[in-house]
Length: 320
Image (cartoon, rainbow, N blue to C red; front, side, top):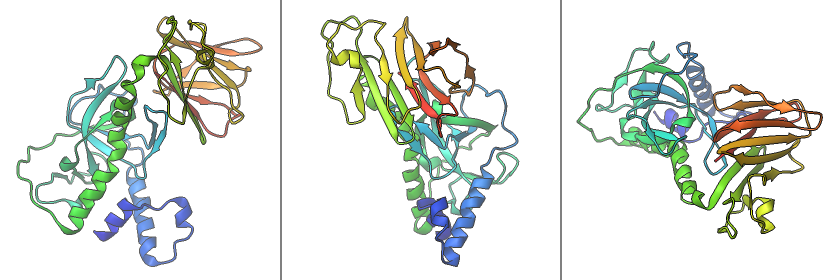
């Protein structure tokens, strides 16, 4: 049991594995690899994802851009079971309540529900009903299976390593609920902006805001360190749909211009280069190009990924 808790509280990274010096840490390293192998893409995954609903088991994305424009990374692969219906926060964003599921059935108490049938997800698991969390549905990754939770009324007290296990798992679940906390942090201020854009690439992370369009003196609220207003806003002009948010930086392989027209977004990439734009469903979006630039129009709010041989990593952007 102590080995499980050590793994969950401080999993080995590839860098740490290079300096493992004793058999105990080697065992933790083996457990780390075993956990990752068990949660590798399961053969039961469907190509067409079903409608999100209660009693479904899903994997969680191992990293995601939160609503404040920061990349969040999980130290462990995560599976959850949905325990509520889908609720919408606005036209584009929704959340559900979930319970993580864990392969460490030896950490279950007498009141925990255990599934011993390995065919459901690929291994026996325990449902962490004491660790229910809300999360944005956009961080759900792959549908795995349907599974029905029993009504368990009795809650046995726990201590020792099982108590420590629960504390660690509740702490690790911040990765899940942070997705909706970041949304609520941003939505309170969004009425001050016409639109905003998050961009993340390597260690470059920036959020830029366009104040309200067509307002002579839009309210300019204080921003945090990684936020800026659009250049046009700083000049004190009356802003229109032709004004844009620009991303120009030596770390970026090209310049991006983002405009919002008739409720949708238009992205211009300068200069023309080899590029692939993908939406949050990993579907490629085709653009129009000439000898100087590429233009993608009619884009909706949400997350998009840009792949190009000019960049060593994916460039992630969110329109909001």
